[in-house]
Length: 234
Image (cartoon, rainbow, N blue to C red; front, side, top):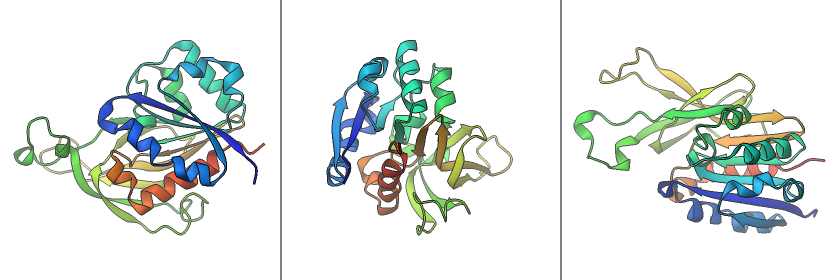
């Protein structure tokens, strides 16, 4: 088996448990012969010599900030063939102020609709936990990341994603239009997507708010297969 070099970059908002979440996948990476380096900030992205070593980047950094040289280094590494993957806010709600980062990822968290106002508790994350379905697209039913997976249900944050059409959508989720919200019809958002960028591959899953969600067999399968698929191919 060929050994690969993986970089885990984690940090940002603690509510997404970046340390506990990323460490859930260390045994999987080890079992597939990845050598793993862990960094607690995106500073390494600016080091071109180090970045050239990695075949895969697993990012879990919600919000936070990234400098111009760091995002340029990340984009260059992906374009040169380094894979990039992640889940939920750790990749789809990272570095909001960087247009270059948002263009690289192809989809950005906008909001997560919540429970009816009468059911909300002040400040509780659970206000945004909804029952929803992740539905496979025709492409998703054939793609190696999601092939063989049926549509599945979750109760967690349901991401409303702003996106472009350079992504390949493997699964979607549809937000209803309840009477307490201002939108007038259901909105379908990508829930799992891939993207080709230069010689590199990206894979994003919007599910993954907490270790409990990441432990869902469907979510975990998508993330683990996404790591393998995104890894440098040449």
